[in-house]
Length: 113
Length: 116
Image 1 (cartoon, rainbow over the protein chains, first blue to last red):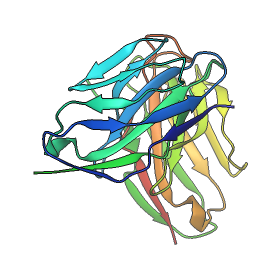
Image 2: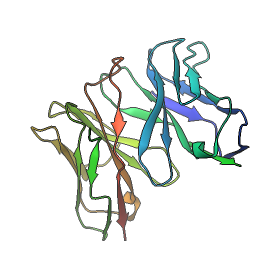
Image 3: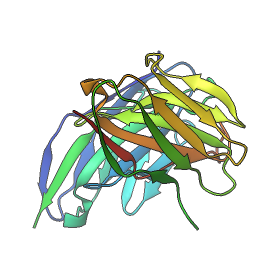
Image 4: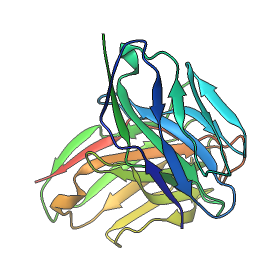
């Protein structure tokens, strides 16, 4: 079946530090992979996505590369800001033809000045 | 352009009652999905509707039901509410379905349901 395993948090970093949040997945075939972000009191926002192997998704300084050989989609950012404090979710859509996203448990990031 | 809109934003219900949550997708989007997010966890898929037909169903009891209207808006109904149904209910919309490259899924801000 489909599943996502995400690095447990919480993660606390100083401003301008390097961020990595690990995500690995299990799926049949080649799913599409996503990172969503949830700011306090808000719904989910799509951060970036990749739809095939070796694709790199990027947005707002965040990047993630679809690695088929390691079934991973790690999120990285070179220099985090206080405004990046949020919960980050890794997710996949399988190949069944439906839009059912499978989410990881989320990683809470706090960036301190 | 308006995003995915949900109503109500917050509500409190008593055990055993019934609740209806509403969702309007982004204009032009034909697919609506519903997710339940319990505090501290990732969202769990409940239903997907595409072109008014059910396309997917998650592992939820029959107390949960949904439908999609001709204008592509949707309602999620939950009967015989339990304390464990307390959660954020998220609606998501997309133009199509499946893993098409252009098929991005957008979420609303959710409806907070508290069952007491």
